[in-house]
Image (cartoon, rainbow, N blue to C red; front, side):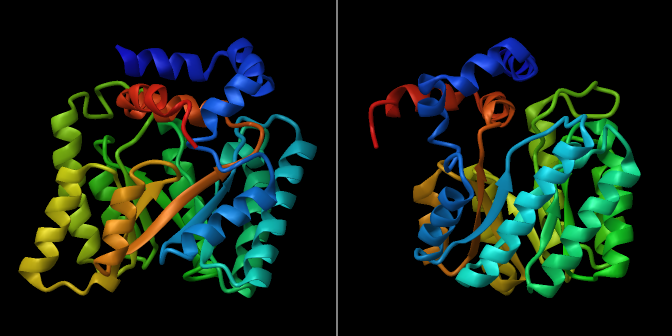
Length: 304
């Protein structure tokens, strides 16, 4: 019930306007959002790099319906790519298609993302096309395939373990050498296309994780679930799998202790660092994904 409530709140425009303009909202979001500016995100990336952890930078925004705003979103990413190269950061970028005009014109979104991927290829970094609701799944995968064909190794995407189609999608993408970020999924989907029970999502995630880790394609396992992380670590120990064949990915501000522990133990770790004034939908989905974060925020509100 809490999950459905937070997802519904993430789409409430009045709550979004109030939250993004209030100092209380910004204070609450600061645990999961690095700041409002590019510089704040770059500084956060430098901090995690200093701990042996890599970064993915995400300029928050989605559901853009104006071509000029879509291009403005792209301009921020081009600035990020230049800054990552100039500062020598161990980082890449992640972008949502709805942020760059997918709802206006899919061809516009693809042109914009193609420009970003070409730029990233020249700067020796990488663009992750983020995954949104199921209405975007096939279009996102197909666009990633087309861009990968032009700039191999410079673009990848995200798959969500709660979707029933994901095993087939994972085999399809790694068969082409396309890098995947595997997550559980944070959108509300009907039972016909998504597993409704957490235990089934966890089981599917675990099976997909091992498939990707042994695929020969470098993939990211995005989870804070200690049980699942433990399964991966045991698998590595039992099979002697090279730790460099995959990485763990976690969210900014979540399980910092586990991030540091994994990095210390020689695992690749990447932290997803979101930033920007349009933080509200992202923040609410983090609460929907793990309602225990509400308690976490309450306990830590007056800290740091």
